[in-house]
Image (cartoon, rainbow, N blue to C red):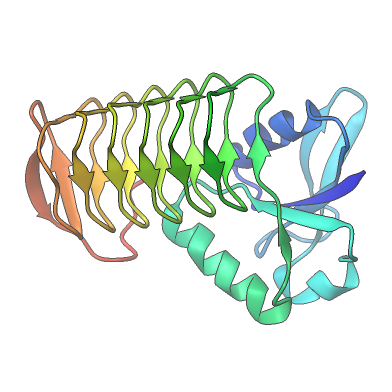
Length: 224
């Protein structure tokens, strides 16, 4: 049985916890958090209570060869920052990909370490989902998509075939991306937008059809 550490303690971490608890051969040993004190209760499911057991600086004290981890934080940039911080302490840390028992993975799909696929998602054959990505509730990712490392989509996103989503980029809730479209790195698509043309790096797009609204910084917040 794999022991799982969950990094982060916000609302999204409880969603990830609930997904992990449905998967056999996983045992959640606790949360890692930089702000909460050791022993703080993060989640309760049934008669089980799950607490913060350490911060990142103390990881070596709780990790053994059977310990795996997942970052349960929605922000792409924070996931990347935490990944780098952990790997400075534990170079070969075991990142676990969490694939919901209530999603559909069709055919030949590659999913990178640390990625989380939430309930109701559908990913079709030929897709390559990178490391530490997030495919959210009931999103439909059609054939031959490429999601680069640390990219993500909100709930109910739909993509056509052969879509490319750049590193650290985000597709907002209920947005749609037309087939063959490329979305650049560090780019955000606003909720309910319809993307019909390629999108540049470091940009915010919104609307039907989606148009560039402005440039955006690398570490700018987008999840409110």
